Picture 1: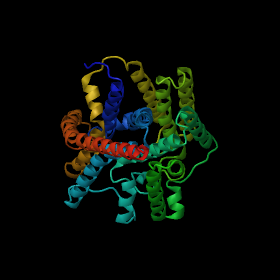
Picture 2: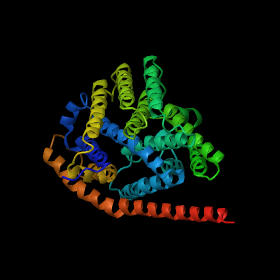
Picture 3: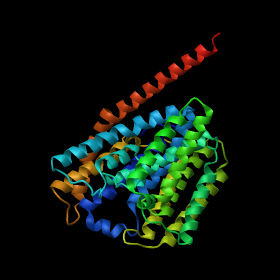
Picture 4: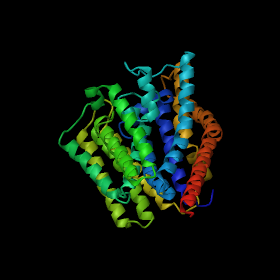
Amino acid sequence: MTGPARLGWLDALRGVAALVVVFDHSSYTFLPDFRQDLMPHFNTGRYGILVFFLVSGYIIPHSLERRGCVRSFWIGRIFRVYPLWAAVVSVLLTLHALDVVELRDLGPHSTATVVMAHVTMLQELLGTPSVLLVLWTLSYEMSFYLLVVGLFTVRLQRRSAVFAVLLVVLAAGCTAAGLTLRPSALSAEFGTGPVIAFAAIAMGAALCCAGAETAVLRVFGGVLGGVLALVLVAFNGTVPLWEGLVILAVMFLGTTVHRAEAGQCSWVFAVGTAVIVSVCAVGSAYWWGDGEHFTRRGWITAFLLAVITFGAGMAVRNRCLPRVLTGLGAISYSVYLVHPLLLTVIDGTVGRRRHDSAVREAAFFVVLLPVCLLTYRWIEAPSQEWGRRLTRRLTRRQSVAENEVLTP
């Protein structure tokens, strides 16, 4: 056991979510029969992802507001997310070049188009399939970052509950009215290349302007990034329109919980927001109905258990937590990105099992976790430290420049 840490409960939740996501994907290979029986009743993948989204919703605005600087926030995010992402994708491409693994079918897109879409990390919202399936969630994470920065620059960051309710009510309304869009609707209408080019330019401008010294440029950059994120999620996602809106609402629900804990809104208000988000999200899934790759019972069960899990984490946030869970949370990003790479290698060499093998499933976890510990120590931890050093250096330079201006 480890003593209570202020954010240790979030690490524990990330650890649980990471293990469930790994199980969801590894069960394709090692437990196909069990998976087929389980998924209609409990979508384990959506459960783990929704827990991740709730945690991100809690911690990301806290990180931005603690720094109080958009530029420092983006530096921290870039050094947190991109290095391991680049390493995993590079290994995947190398293994593909050596004919060890097969890449997903990326359609008729050119290499330049695919690369540009992935560099923005919005590829799943730009009509370009992710080279690794799990990368689709990072597109929604990046959209949330853009929205949070946008709200921060126009000083509406404390309206998290309002945005959560608006988004989820809109999702429920669209589903109840039967409003649907084809996947990647904007890319289908205007072409994938033009949409990617526009989004890349807009995102670059948004990041540069949002961290500028001039207030007008900061607001312009924040609003541009936020509008870009909303448009892409609503009109160019690969998940249904209602689910894209629910994903954003879930993250803003996590932010609302942070507001309540920080004393910026009442707990009654936060609980009421959670109830509205839950009712509308469940209603959206129910009205959407069952499909070829979607069962409403499995999704609804996953959603409700994710919210309950997050609430349970809040309830024990001041208690001692098992070190194994907080440790798993620390390496959860490595677990999330590395496990599909290992599964791709296994599927491309040994092949998937025709029948369940719990022993092989357990052995996969035994191999995976030490590898992820190494990637955390060799890639994640050093890159995060580089980001902190760069932020401190830029902060010192800014302080020196301000002192020179103020000195007569």
